[in-house]
Amino acid sequence: MRIVYFTHSLASCWNHGNAHFLRGVLRELIAEGHAVEAYEPEGAWSLDNLLRDRGAAGLNAYRTAYPELSSRTYAREEEAVERVDGADLVIAHEWNASHLIAALGRARTNGRFGTLLFHDTHHRAVSAPEEMAAFDLSGYDGVLAFGEALARVYRAQGWDGRTFVWHEAADTRLFHPPAEEGERAGLVWIGNWGDGERTRELETFLFRPARAAGLALDIYGVRYPEEALATLERFGARYHGWAPNAVAPSLFARALATVHVPRRFYVEALPGIPTIRVFEALACGIPLASAPWEDAEGLFTPGEDYLVARDGAEMERHLRALRAEPGLRRALAARGLATIRARHTCRHRAAELLAIAASLSAPVASPRNWRRA
Image (tube, rainbow, N blue to C red; front, side):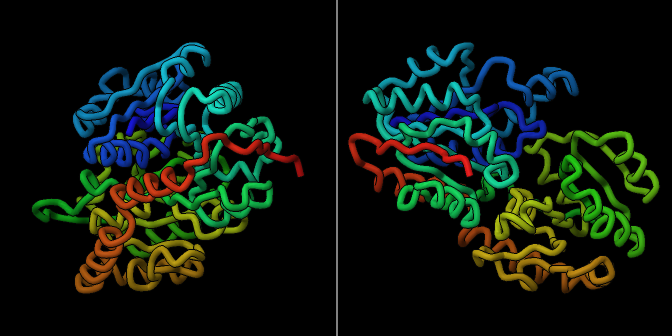
C-alpha cells in the first residue's frame, strides 16, 4: 500500500509532539512493507525554531534514530497534491494550513487518490472551534481523533460512523528500558511550559512537592518565558532547554521517576487523553506519578501502572515513597512497561490504522463540513 502523511514537520520535534508518534507509526508501516511518504511545508515553524535554537546539528539525533525516515517539502498546495496522485491512503494532520486541507479534499472527491483521513491530536476542537471551522473536510472519508472525548466532538458535527479513536502510543523501537541499569537520581520532567494551560498545576504537582521530597529536578523543554524560568530558579529546578525526543530514553534512564502534569484542557474538556510522554515514559520503565487525570477510556490501571495524586500533599507523599522504596519503583516500572508492550505501541497503532483504512473502502467520500456551533 502507498501511504502518504502530511505533517507540519517530520524532521523537527521542537514544540511539535505529534512528530514523536508519527515517526514511530511511519517506520512500523515501512517495516510491514508499505511504501510511505511524508510531506511538510517549506518554512515549517517548528523546524525554523529548531534551527535557530540548535542549528543544523539539532537534527542529528532524529537522523541517527530514524535512518529509514525522510520527508519532502513543498512550496505550494498544488505541488503537494500532484505528488500524491494514485496513493492508496492519505492522512493530513490538523496542524496544516486550511488551504492544503481543502485542496486534498477536492483531489479526493475528484478520484485522484484513495482514502483520505483528517488526523486531530489537539484540543482546538473545544478550545478554538472557530479555527476548526476554517477546515473544509467535505472531501474526507473519516477523522482520526486521539481520544474518545475528541471523537465525540466530531460525531456531534455529523461524523458519526466515520470518526475513529486513534490514540498516540510509544515507539518501542526507541523507547525501552536501558540495556544496563546505571545510577539513577532525582526527577526528570520533559515538556513545554504549556502556554499558561498548566502553570498553577506545575507548581502544585511538580516543583513544590519535588523540593519538599528532597528530589533534584531536571527540566527539559521549550517556550519557557522569563517568569517561568524565574519560577524554576525559585524552586531550585535545573533547566536544560530543548532536548531532541530521540534522546529522551537516555534522560529517563538517569532519573528515579518522572511526573505527568496534563494541560487543563485534557483534564476538564477532553478527559481521558494522556500526553505522549506518558506512553514514552512507561515504555522506558521509569516510575511515573500523575497529577489528577481521569483515565476515562481505561488505557491504563491507575495505582498499578502509575501513581495518581489528588493534590500537592499526596504528590509529595508519592515522591517520598518513590525515593525511599526501590520495590515500589520496580513494581510500577514493570507493570507500566507491560501495559505499553501489550496495548500501546506504534506497532499496535499501525495495525489499527490499516484496519480503519480497510473499513473505509467507499469509492467516493460523503460531503461533510465542520459546523459552527
